[in-house]
Image (tube, rainbow, N blue to C red):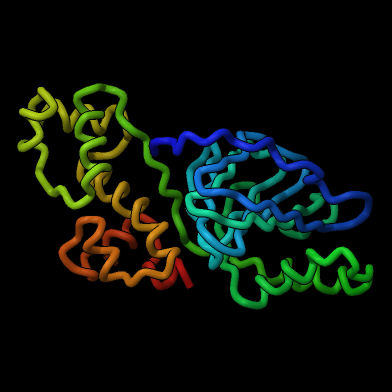
Length: 258
């Protein structure tokens, strides 16, 4: 995805849970397009935003996360975290030695209202030790995986395929088949099809579908209707968009945005 061009802030400090404490919560306001550069830390992290849309990149994939879901990031996993729209990152950091969760890979979890309130509760610095321990136990019990997939998108480097990709990004509703892009890109449909697969890992149709879903995410996070977003990103009907969203993300927009 093309960068927004803003300088990233430094990685967050004080990430590990100190001493014998199982969990600490840190909050970081993020402007749209700002990023914590790739880093890792000795604590597990639950990357969650109270508002907006969070983006997390790891070696294994890229996730876009509204407040209804969060990403479990195991300790020592390299990752970069940013805001696709203005967001507040509020992350629990958990000491591996005091955490019963043993997932070894980044895992998307649902954030129902109770988990949301527990995270906010644990962010209170005046919380007593017994109250904190009780809340931590409930929080760990509430971590439930959901079948959301990463939606990372690799852009083609070849200038012919790149021309097509950038034109689609500028006009998401452009539904021309590859055969119609030959004169614009200076390559045959067969060559363009080969380039998309070789350079992005996706066929042209799947690449365009994933791009459209990525661009739809911030609009849905703003509370816009599925029907209006569907038309905005190039689908003739809400049902066609919902089907594409489910193929890409693994959940429907209603399930994903809670």
